[in-house]
Image (cartoon, rainbow, N blue to C red):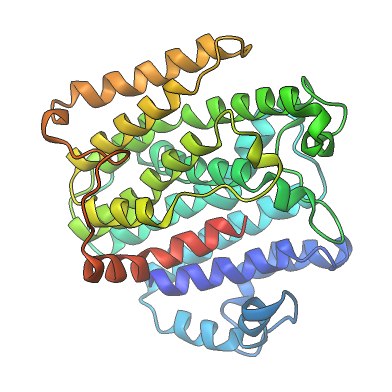
Length: 346
């Protein structure tokens, strides 16, 4: 069911991502996409490489969808409908305010978190807490905002049209145009803008920890927790790093393997978040206009981790040289490919 859910949303996202599709053609497809998943004859040729294959052979996805139990179908349809409508809205308007930014990220990622929670519930694997919608949404927003920060250069250089997701309310303090941030002569202002974007992402950590601590199924826990650790690790790399505006910034493969290998319990999550928040803290420049705000946010994260009372036996994600279990890594990588591929594409 999760694979079908991913493929449906991946196809929807392929339509959104294809900047060659005219707006007056794209918007109706996005809005009606939740109905197309019931039609085994429907397909729409767009995208490139493997995404074009997906769109050309979408009838296979529809066939698999129709084999799911009714409860799974309804959950997938609802999320697809809401996501398609949200994507259509932001095809026609730019991300101006931080509220717009949160809303866009909700449509393209927060809804993924809500959908997965509903699928876990329908499968009988998890129960929902009273605030499940808010914390599920935060899980998606934390991942999506991390990707938007990391992928600035790729998005701004997109052909034939730039993809601009950083909110003007933030970048407008530092540049006249979003694309100006990539020029070396603007490095100081660009990095300050980047740092404010990172602070904005960090605000979701408390909800993310709350969501993960509520999970009961070990495989679902790892499925959810590993991307979150990868996200805070990526933010730690991106923070105060002008390379975000020059090329690719990503975690080393060895560190990625270590995260996948070690993340088994909530104690591991607290340890990782504590380590990466410490790493972030060492990078804060006292001359940054948001330095005080950043330090306060990081200290709040560290307090949450300390208060859990499990840090004393943690293994460091940053400095330890222990070797990962390769078989376990391969198994988890396959499981996580669904989430990673979808969120990296946004």
